[in-house]
Image (cartoon, rainbow, N blue to C red):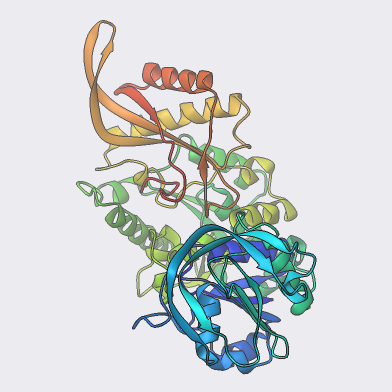
Length: 510
């Protein structure tokens, strides 16, 4: 495995993706967690120090115990990670005369190690305001750019190296090859991390952890919770009780579809709980998105704890938490990454939860979760369901959540998905959904003036939700979707299309 230390980079998840594409497992942890003792326990084959927005000399800049550089484990520092290595080992960092952001041409002067089979001149992506003035003893300069004399360094004896640029982003040509040279050649990792091995190990771990106890699981009908349910069911069978909480914030016909696919097809033990009023009443008048998420998360857990009391020996709660959920909520665990938004599975847990958590997917990305589902026999109709947020339609309604507004959004969203499927786009895109805006506008319908709601359509392409781009649907299809929603959903007289990428926006609106 490869241990990635998170210094706050917006690209740290991309580093993990690149390593896993090599069929090598890796994990991301905040610097405070990664001590020499911790590394001696997990025994990684290599360490990658991520970039970050801080200056190494800033008072609150993230640091890791420099002793990790003396453990004999190969280390690669990227951007800020490289500057940490230089500073910790006796080099000098200074504010750059010219900050370097964007494309630069890398001039490589040492083709061994990380630059094996890489052209002498290679476009790369820079993002830094500090630069290295002096390298520590024992290091050599292996690459430079016109603006950055020290763009890459290496200490051959200690197997410690650094890049001032970002090899993990697509903009750096041959960046994947550079990372492969580190992971496979320098660290000598084997390509043995597959969904088959992950499934086998997960099932064994769940059996060991649970023993003769029972597990309850929140089943939403989405791919994450469904994969989690099937995985745990394969491990402990009837010891698992799945609970579907009808919170009134679900998509159209969610319960009926779930009964058809999981309960009847896979013969799983599922309970259906009607808790609509428990959610809608506390949400009355609430418009702040974070407050909505916290309220929904707390009630979700309250309902589960109430159900847990009805199940003898139910000591565990299973959740379909994915790795991006954990990382985007990283500061919850003391990491330096900025909180983008709290997540239903991660940020909404009460402090005194009476159930122990099982999160078998928490180190997987979305596409890896789908591959796992395929491996363990999940039906295609569930594997290819588009992502749906834990708080449901509650965060796709901008402003106050009311039953009337839910009914409007539910119908508009169902009509949108129907047309996307008919046009053959459902599996081609990452996500397609409707958002109800707190905006009314004037319209004309049947020669009469209307003053009704606006629906925003959000359709994005992505590999793993870390970055996303809006989908350039044919105008004819967009026009058809708009026409159908306006004509068939009472209370809507305008449809707009969201053409914002991630970043700067997020995929969900709240």
